[in-house]
Length: 340
Ligand code: SAM
Image (cartoon, rainbow, N blue to C red; front, side, top):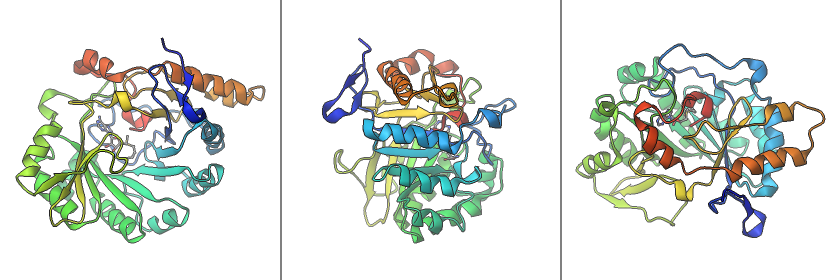
């Protein structure tokens, strides 16, 4: 019974009654890093520029989504700050959907000198990916010697009053020996430090059992390094993250256990890929093409809404796909084209 329905207050729900209020928008598949867990192992084929949505096309979708109950938009990529004209686009998103909770996910390398501007445009919160606190290990994981820039970017965001979440993909044998340093970062800075379980995303993923460092192990180890108290669900919206405060600390520690646990039942997300496809579930390559519609002068708003509703109606329970295909990669599209 995959029928979409109107949820209370006119918001859209999917066939399982999940209300969708959060759109993750990938604004580019290009990135200045080559993170080992994100990019395909083989040569990366960038999507041609003409196939990537224009900012105006993204804005049209966001404008349409707002009255349907979209309350949160995350701009991601690839590396969103690497796309030309991004700051102006951010400003336009704020204007297009007043009151929308707009967030940014970035690798942080291009933040120095820019955090104040982003805050002045109305951005309140930023997620910064940082998988190592050791410059050499950072280089090994990302393929770039840019640790100092990310670290400076974090400080500048905090100084600019942005709420900062730092995300590290948990990789056994790669960054697990740095756990104490990450706990210390959270203890001494007013930020949320979160570990994301490594997900087998993309046909050419590097994922294997030996690299998998589950959330339960991270928590058990971190619990020996600091006094952690759980932040109770419902205190604040954390999405799929489970958070802990650190006794005597300024920040908090958290885990996102997309592999050992799942949050499909409460999933409120829809993704828009940079080539203009709606992706109802991270784990499923089933996507709904919007780009040809957006580029045809004949397309009415009603037609675009129809596709949006159809995509929502068929939003699957991703954990079932994950259980079936974990060993060979749950989907073919690389994370860099999906946006995380
Ligand atoms: N360039 C930006 C960044 O680095 O944050 C945005 C794009 S990146 C694809 C978005 C998020 O996906 C990052 O937090 C990254 O760590 C995460 N990610 C990428 N591949 C992953 C994987 N296989 N498993 C878990 N998280 C992954």
